[in-house]
Length: 405
Image 1 (cartoon, rainbow, N blue to C red):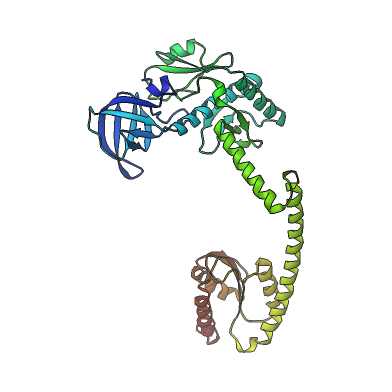
Image 2: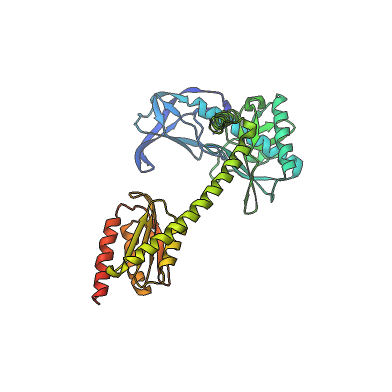
């Protein structure tokens, strides 16, 4: 069956009748499956997501195709034979039309020019991608693709829909396809861009490529097994992306106090300064670690373990402190990070004792860790339980001194 939305993609409303309505579930939630005599809501297929809209004001939360029928999932029951009014979410529909027609155009000119075939595509929520059976696209090829696609769009090129009784008839008219669903039955649609492409397709499309407005390719492609992913935007998505980019540019101009052309230079300057500051900070933390190690050694005679916490420390600080304390016999625990936030820890000491108590410390700090040769380190999801860790250390190493651990 060719649905009303496939005969006229610009149709926004439709009056029809309920054929069946049965109780079901969708994503674990109670729902009703509604089959109508016809529909203006496109069911998922051909790389294109389904439409959204309403049936008699009731929100449609999913539309899927089963054989020749479209199944509409709604949260309320509608009796059979009820006359209903369907309204499509036009913003979502037109966006999908722009992306899908844009994909047909880009895929066709790539194959016609370079011989790279489209093996699959996906209409994503934020951007779409085409999977090509080539190892990579060069910068020159990318520039040609984008320029040519937009020239064809500006040429006011029509997009024609042809309906054939079956796939065999469509193929006889030189229509290509990547394969129809196994449960497909009935007529077949062919989307034609005159002189450029004839492709079997179930999706919704514009009637003229000028309605796509513009195509923008992402400069970076993504390698995949057996091919390359090419990412793109079409139509209103390009305008939204440009608007977001201008907002970011305005914010950066204000923060950096320089014009857009100098943003990268200003960021480079800030990064250079940060590297210098970080280098100085690490040096200072190392000196602090040496001083703190000296102070801990001076008071170690009355202790069974050594523990120190530093809020602004890092792994280099912990290693420096432990290295400075490695020549004394007591076990050492170091934690770094916000007092009640996430952080890191390092336990050093007798290999047997460390292997026994290290995992317990990780558990108390709601983290994970590991190690060997008398070192156990890891990440802590919270340091607010440090007092419980100290209680564990006191108990464990007191028993060790008494010879019972």
